[in-house]
Length: 240
Ligand SMILES: Cc1cc2nc3c(=O)[nH]c(=O)nc-3n(C[C@H](O)[C@H](O)[C@H](O)COP(=O)(O)OP(=O)(O)OC[C@H]3O[C@@H](n4cnc5c(N)ncnc54)[C@H](O)[C@@H]3O)c2cc1C
Image (cartoon, rainbow, N blue to C red; front, side, top):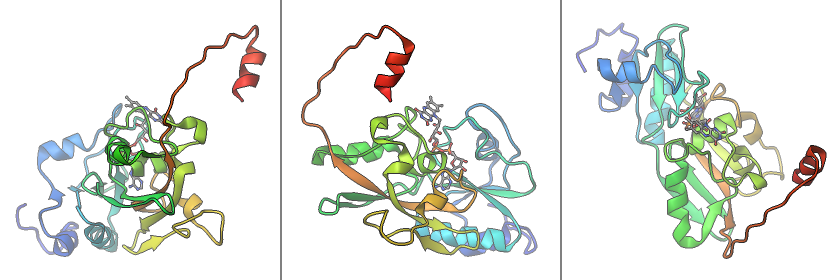
């Protein structure tokens, strides 16, 4: 990245996180101004941190300089969720935050960085005979756990609920760079719990950095059935 004047809006971000996680080349800015369907304005830079500490430092520096930040997961949505045209902004790409932090088979929880794809999480859990309850969207080869939690994605494992139903807690980077932990990291219903506030928020309230999800054991046998119904009402009744 070229040297920036000290009053350039990106200067405080670069000072906080260095050059490495900041993309400013024309191809990257053009690519990241698109979602699957539409195009928005180009960001000032794409910020691609590979640690939660860097994520928090960069967000705090950007908002401190008056710049909007827009989170992005796998980029697989088509509803303008991470497109922005309200002025200079930093596009926060969480894709390098892709680690499985802990698989806890006693509490039956898994904690991941939010940018991990559903596919990578599934592959990490499969050898242990484990999976999360709702295990992602049809786009889950690229779509992230953080994106699924932010849009309440649903597909695989939907009989057990939506993605956000699997969430026990989040670590969220707030606008000023504070990292806030929701919930108890164990069970959701006990005690004050802000997890729901950040579920399905489309990233408006903060950037999910880590997600703890409930684990279930993978089925050891599968069976299939086919049913025929004489009316829509009977079909819908059986489904519900
Ligand atoms: C082929 C295809 C199949 C699909 N199948 C399904 C499906 O089966 N079910 C379904 O529900 N949807 C589906 N979708 C839509 C889309 O893939 C999902 O909504 C998915 O959850 C998006 O996840 P993502 O990581 O790509 O998020 P992105 O598209 O990058 O972002 C989605 C939203 O979440 C926010 N966000 C992302 N990461 C974070 C974070 N860490 N913290 C805070 N906010 C964040 C963004 O700002 C944006 O508002 C499909 C899309 C395609 C193209």
